Length: 278
Length: 300
Image (tube, rainbow over all chains, first blue to last red; front, side, top):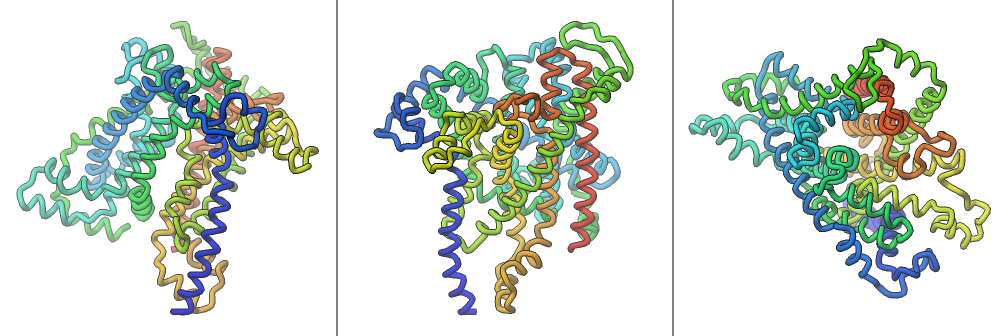
């Protein structure tokens, strides 16, 4: 056993060094834009591979003020947070019911969501647009939130159901014997147990909604509620040659998602592991 | 699975109210099923997407579709994209996951680095790489500075290399996601089993193939399904990097559909093409899912 430990220790050092090199090479296409984003404007093409002579953060200020990034950031946050809330609340309630009830109807309902994950929503986009337009939902927050929630819901229910099926029933049984109502049982006993899979749902859906470009372009185009991705797109279109400005806005748009990922990473791994077992 | 079923059956009196499912079911029914059905119906019409008039034309759109040679070419390109994406991102995902599982210091930090391409805005990823691939961009400058200037080329306009230039970006964006799912699968393997195998003199390769790989079967089912559907629907990177060029060589089915529908206004024809792609994705994904599930059961 001792020999194994020693051997492992040596290997750890080698592996760590190796992985550091690999990881740095891997994110090089990402570090590079950071370098460019703090380069003074005239250095971008004169010295393409070199380090910046001094750190110039004015690109960030310009990108933030001229690119309308503040408003876009707020819009994206409103859309993402509302969508994720709807998905977590209604997705977990639905999945819990499906996972705990028996009978062909509930199996069929499970299949309804599984097939839903594969259906290509892009095929229905234009009819949806026409209908939304008639209902006055294009260019509004409720419209895009309902659309996003409907599109992401099948995967959410699928993940929750798999996890709940693998969760033992004894806690909720005890709560019910103590006289708790179904909603109380769910809110105080079940939901806290779902933390790992909830983290998975929040990260997966949060990233998809935050990063969405296509839907927002079609359904919010021309309104004041444009999210970061579309704002960035039009801003880049206007400044395609000023790469330092472009990359400053790229980095700005990335910061919130990286923070979210760092916060939820560990929990999400457990959620995935649970989903795979179930 | 069957054991679990029996156990829960005993507690059948725990009843969640049936109406708890309503909001989710209504949302999915309207936003997924109804809209796709509506879109599917237009495949049999000559709707141009603007007017209110759509005449039923039967299978005419499908006839045109199967006659056009360029559709077969973009189908072939899409299959090539899909296979390369599946192979590339899964190999890299497994390798990264087994190296970053345990026995590495600062593994959380390293995991985040590998995962960064996954969480970047697809738009940002594409613009970053477009800049790297530019003729006077960093990649060619690097090649020139290490005296390999004969390798420097017009990456995104090259008839053969443009495909691989796109592929590198797509795999870069997917490998981290595969890694995360494989890492989750590896959490189910206890350290003791590996220690025992080391004492018994099993080589690293033997431990990988005999212990890790069988236990990764469920993760593989997920990553294969994800990368398969992603590959068949590949769109963003092509639009941003080459816009289907040079000479339509990098065009995928999804970009053809987009252009027919939104650029050329042939909505009926675009919907027909989209329906064919849908059927392709559903059939291939389900067939693969069943095959992988069967393999999972055999391995356990």
